[in-house]
Length: 84
Image 1: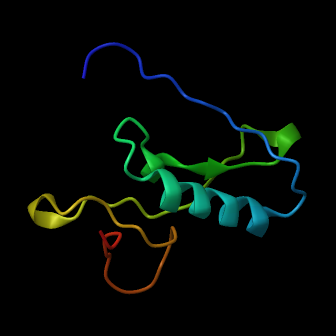
Image 2: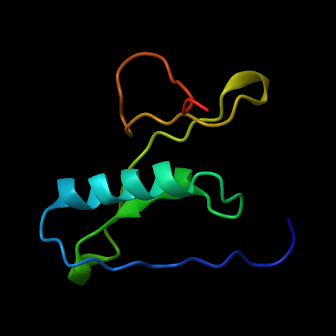
């Protein structure tokens, strides 16, 4: 890849972190087929503390080109890919 990547910041009106994560999960489920979206890099933050971001998913690269881990960041056990 050459050149800078562009980031889309998508503010929400939710005041609950778990709801923001659930929304990110729904967006990933519905838009995972869009190849230019890197859902593995998804983070959430408070509106006024955007410099303190929390990663949503583990995103570890899986062996054999099987994609990236789709489990929550910091999950116990082995990594696993999204079912296709």
